[in-house]
Amino acid sequence: MAMVSMSISLPALTHPTRRRLNRYSGMPFASVSSESAALGVKVTEGEGKLPKVVLTSSGGSEADIYLFGGCITSWKVPSGKDLLFVRPDAVFNKKKPISGGVPHCFPQFGPGLIQQHGFARNLDWSVVDSENVDGNPVVTLELKDEPYSRSMWDFSFRALFKVNLTTKSLSTELVVTNTDNKPFSFTTALHTYFHASVTGASVRGLKGCKTLNKDPDPKNPLEGKEDRDLVTFPGFVDCIYLDSPDELHLDNGLGDIISIKNTNWSDAVLWNPHLQMEACYKDFVCVENAKIGNTQLEPGQSWTATQHLSIN
Figure: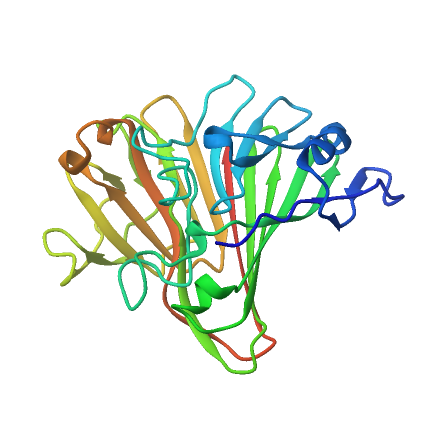
């Protein structure tokens, strides 16, 4: 596993509404916390004593991001309600990915030649930049190839994951760069778990999309076309929506309508395990932005995708 590399900086003079932490690595995260807390960015100890970044906006919202897996595990709006969900069987010991929040699937979505959903959710990411823009904290995490990743996917790469928190939104930007001397291809997704009442949850915006339904046989998905205005979760759901629109709306059944906007995430995935996870399936749904088809990058090329979650 990669070692966690913390980054900290001294405030720099920039735009009057923008305060930035420049990049200084290797300092203990107690120092990171004390110097960056004023910017709404704090590195502290989370579950299992794993380091996590806590973002706090001037409007009272909060988000937690574990460096293990670069995983956002919490997005609390000012009322204190957490719109994300972490499964009760989640472990924080680095022996398996964190089950919930916004896990990364990279460089492979689903099963394939390497481990399920790739290795990015099994590695330590590092903090490389922090700033505050108009009271909104922003942090950028980085993942690079290392022996564990190259043992299964022998390419050099750099992934940057920027997270921006405002009073009513949580935005992310993922940039993947080929730092190798040969081309590579990948698939990827943000496997977002939303807190929900599964019997009342629905997704609007998918009507007309081509579908690949993995129920009943995940190895042989059924092709189809979505004809519903509102897609619900009446039982086991595992369905890919190809060429999905750049905005969906999730009614979580708990009184919230969440806008899910994206750029360059070409596909969407809906998932709920139903009785396969009897202890918790009623409390969440997954609405995932994904890139199902292979994306090829030549040496030096980058691919960028954004996700913007917001409530009214």
